[in-house]
Image 1: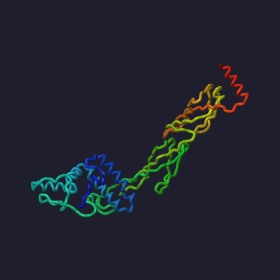
Image 2: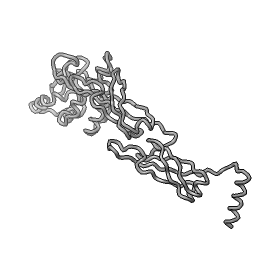
Image 3: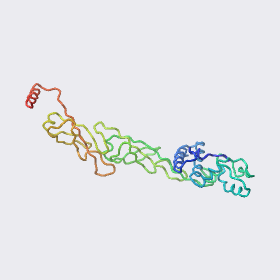
Image 4: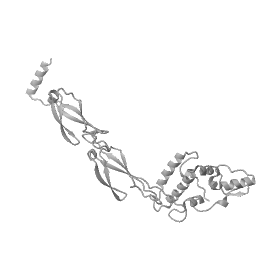
Amino acid sequence: MAYIDYYQVLGLKKGATEKDIKSAYRKQARKYHPDLNPNDKEANKKFQEINEANEVLSDAEKRKKYDQYGENWQHADAYEAQQKQSGGSRPSSGYSGGNTEGGYNYESFGGGGDFSDYFQSMFGNMGGGGGRQAKYRGQDFRSELHLNLLDVVESQKQTLTVNGKNIRITIPAGVENGQTIKITGHGGAGSNGGPAGDLLITFVIKDDVKFKRDGYNLHTTVNVDLYTAILGGELIAETLTGKVKVPVKPGTQNGAKVKLKGKGMPVYKKENEFGDLYLSYQIDIPTELTDKQKELFKELQQSSI
């Protein structure tokens, strides 16, 4: 019987925890899954080895016997009974088959072929025939969807082509850059009747020229002419949903901020909830003054002394 080091198959050391085994199995099984490696005999062989290794190492009792008896662990009970009758001792951990001890020949339990007899008894031949067929979940597909900020101000529907299939999805208003949503059952097909994987879509939202996003709040800079900043008045500011009039207090300073409540981004999956829009004032200092204007500024300067 060909010896398979189950720990090596999963890329683990002998002291691996149950969590390590589970994680390693999932990673390897997805990599060598038949759906992702069609007509690849080596990948199919590796996939079977991975499942065999997991079947043994994820079972505490089987793993204990494997750690002690190596490739012949499945015959441990028969061997121990033999030793009790003959008064012999157990082989050391990792004992390799093909030898005799106390008149006991391990090869009498062995078999040929590319895989161990244990795997054949547990899973049968992949793709048909006798034996139990294990069900495996399909692989998750991942995709990126590139959008502009204005694309996520309102919910919208969009059709994506994934693995040759058209999938119509709803893009919820307010999704953030880097956020991932899951479309259940639109990943890879399962094996042996197992469920399909999921489609995971990550949103990549391009930075906007005018608005800087901070969660559900927005920040933008608006210019205020010197005279309005000094005397007060109003200005027209752009928001995501259109232009609005904003009052400016007399004596407004450069860098002053005002908040427009509810004029920010929509809150994800919360209807009629929005962040705020913050305006930062930038005072425009005139660079080309007429002689009359200069004279007036001089008078103003003198009056303030």
